[in-house]
Structures are given as structure tokens and as C-alpha cells.
Length: 178
Image (cartoon, rainbow, N blue to C red):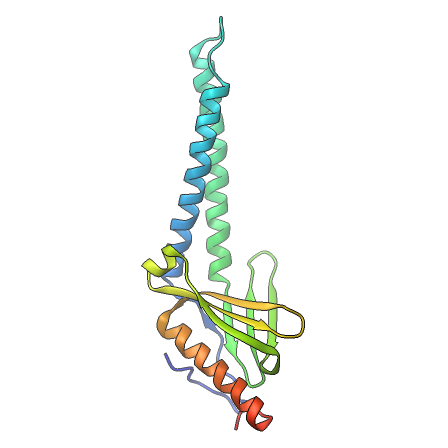
């Protein structure tokens, strides 16, 4: 993927993460909530043993209520995660890389090229299975970082090369756009 569409200032358009990233979010969220549900079910069956005189339907009703609550929270968590993932945008600018995310609370971070110390690529097991990874850019001065998740290998290579090219030009010539 080439970062096409440079304007006069050398900036590209805003880009989104891969649409495959949504599948990774669904799988990760499902695994986490399934584990929580399993632990919850084990706790419920251990705690809510029918006592002498307690009717089994009360136990079933109590378990059903807990399962409905846990399922509702899981679905809300999944929807929130998908909305957050869908809101992620990044742009390789003339003097910095810009990253924005958040659905309910929007955060935008601009990381100037002259502050970037480390460029790395990370990928969890589920992301790797789908051919996705995250680009992590760390700054030198304030130990802050920008992580762009859900990029295909083509995207992560293209963005990291563009960032590194600008960082090197800045170090060699004092300008990221020579």
C-alpha cells in the first residue's frame, strides 16, 4: 500500500485500520467474555447450591438472571470495542504522524518525527492468524507512544517505511520532506 494522495504540505489522507481488524476484536472479546462466563458459572454453581428447603427453580432463576446480565455486559463490551476500532484513523503528515481514536471520547495524538525514537511492530496470536499487526511509535523525550492496531503487513510496512524515511531525512537534512 502506497501512501498516495500527498497534498502540497506532504501530508496524506486519513487512513483506517484493516476491516479484518473487526474479526480480531470479535474473537478477542468472545474469548475474554467466555472465560469470564465460565468462571462466573463455576462460581454460581459453587455458591448457589440448593440448601435444605430451597427449591431448584430458584437456583435456575438466579443462574439465568446472572447469565442474562453477563451476556448483556459482554454484548455491550463487544459493541463498544467495535465502535472504538472503527473510529481509529491515522495520517502520515509532513512533520508528524497523527493518530485519532475513540467513539465516546475522541483522542488525537500528533507525534513529531524529530521525537520518534523507536518504531516497532507487534502482533498477538489472533492478529497474526489474520495477518494483522500493530505499529508502535515511541518518542524519546516524554516516553509517550502511539500504537496503530489492526494494520495489514502491507499497511504496517508502508507506514513504517514512510515514518522512518521522514525521521532519517530529518536527522540528515533537518527536514522530513527533502
